[in-house]
Image (cartoon, rainbow, N blue to C red):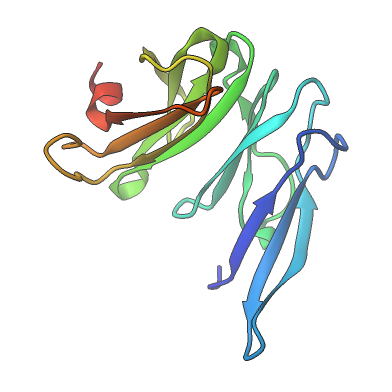
Length: 181
């Protein structure tokens, strides 16, 4: 709504209500400071929360409540603290881990979410959050992932998808490998 810059942080475990903290950053001649803008978000208290992703363009924050679902809220504090949806659980073996948001024009794109123990990535539509497909890559026990949707070079002609496993090994894929399979 305005040009504020925020950070959303969580803990591995914590209260079942108001689990996420959102801080607003402001700068002046002395430096940068942060102020707590709000506390929001549910937590199942079943496992932990390790992945948070914000879709700046559409204004949503997604986070992985590991054994339960992908939770969705408004990223802008003035839009309220009510959960918009809790989706995707039936597509995961155990842990819902890393979340990457592949953005394309007109709100198109995908949420790419690690299905850690299954060794695959579940792809959901960005607009409706509906399951599209599961893609199996060579990355096992993936903790985190991220994506760039613009062509980078001859190796990453369709953009770049990066995944990191428990051993902290990084795997780099042309984004087309995920989306075209």
